Image (tube, rainbow, N blue to C red; front, side, top):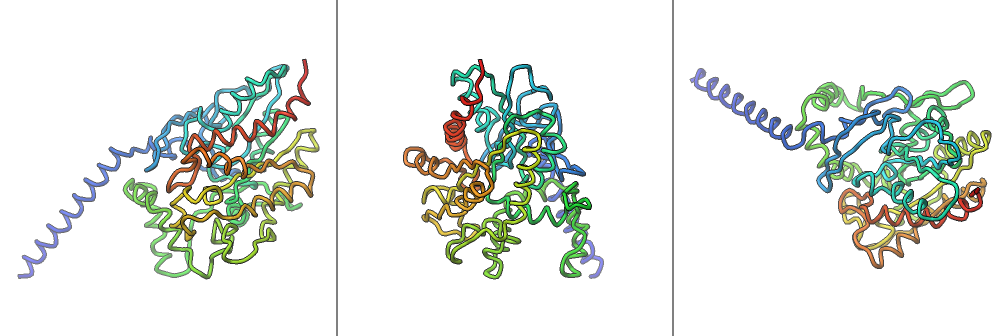
Length: 383
């Protein structure tokens, strides 16, 4: 009897193992690592993570599949020289996934579309648009990039594309950051997850890291359940707390929101301003809306993050950034109204579940920036 039981258990174990191996093989076939960010993104001891110079790959997602070509400077942009060509001026864009062009081709990104608009504006001075956006960046990492690499590109104007999720990201990165004696950030190395709040969780950490590194099925499932996981963690106790709730500033039901908890992001923005000012380089900020602030139809995936369907949320958070810029002498391009106006005739501007801009959204951003920039560019135009 016992030998029969053992035989059945052994056969069951073998069957399960073969099924898992078949599943892993299938995942590697339909979604190879070359179709993921891992093929063109790596960790970095100073910038936490960065794009790999000269890398090529695909970013595949349930809603899109786009090619990535990283230039030799580590940017998702065309090849450019580190030094400006004679007689040329440069605008350097800093930002996160929206700036990088998450979900669209490089040609569809707003920086590429803006470049085309400026080239057709009849200016005598050629202006190069340089896109240094990297998904997951926030003002802290962008400040470090600017000091370590961005300023070497000799920009005449630097535009920080401030995403409201940056507030949460800066809180997280600051906890990992290294600072010098004067309090200036010098690096944000990757800090592996070593412990949790319970001993069962501590036991699972090495196993989880092993799965993440070597088992493609784990990543395949995790990417598709990401929003569900985040939504499940948004308990009533953490809603609106920007240490845990990445989009807490949008939650109108919690009452008036202020920006007192945004001090880390503001500190790094002012650090950029002062660093550039000392070098005679101009500094601007842009802010853009999320789909839930534009139209009741946009970004239905918001419901997974406990936002109400069919409601247009206030643009008060972007107004706070515009007020911050006004108080500190930093021009701010607020694109909220441009997106609201565009939503009257164009739908969709955002991906359904992912929430990033589609190519149409990037077109709106390019038009808004072109309109805001032209007076500045004409004032600096030389024959």
